[in-house]
Image (cartoon, rainbow, N blue to C red; front, side):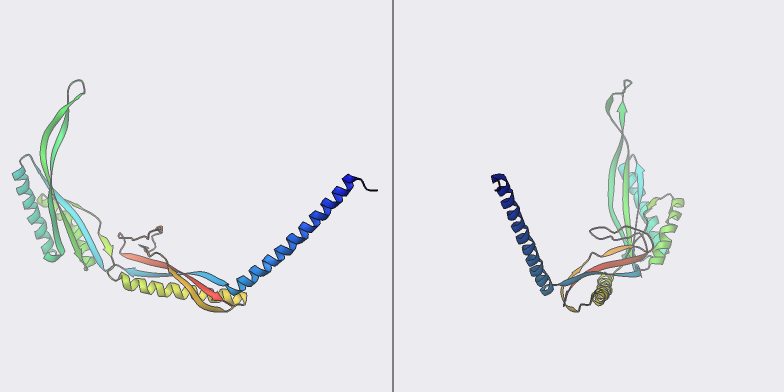
Length: 252
């Protein structure tokens, strides 16, 4: 006769076998159901990309000049003289009046710290007034503005301390550019989907969803990085714009 211990082992073994069979049966059943569900809701998700090289058609150039004097009125008179010199220079270079914007005059009272023989701070001493005026030029004549930005140093010979920033380049037809990029990226995504469908022996049905990516504009051949919010290069005249499109196709 079997002992009680052997009987319990046999019962436990039978129970484990039953559990295993039920588990395997349930797994096959789950797989079958999911497979049916997958077949009813199958899809292909693809990402297409489009890129266009283009040249900027608008330029913004900025700079500023300053004047210094212990007397505020004399500093202002000197800045006014600088203003006329700069304005005359620009008009001689065929810059139109409506392309030039003179900013407000910024006035700063310059001082220096005073210390006693022990090195302790005891106050400030007035040095001079510093007046500064910014100038901004916008134009579609890019070459002309580029030349002026390089030749502006000529006013230094007339006593004007002029500081120039690099030109910034823009494109005024961005909306048309975006449409062209969407077209290119969508065509690319569709081709990818068709290739996948062909290789996997399925047929494409309708587009379930389409999501447009972020517009990225970088300098042409610059190697700049994309950003999550979209890069927008203004330092290069020659640029490359790119965009992605994510398409989801139903298949059968």
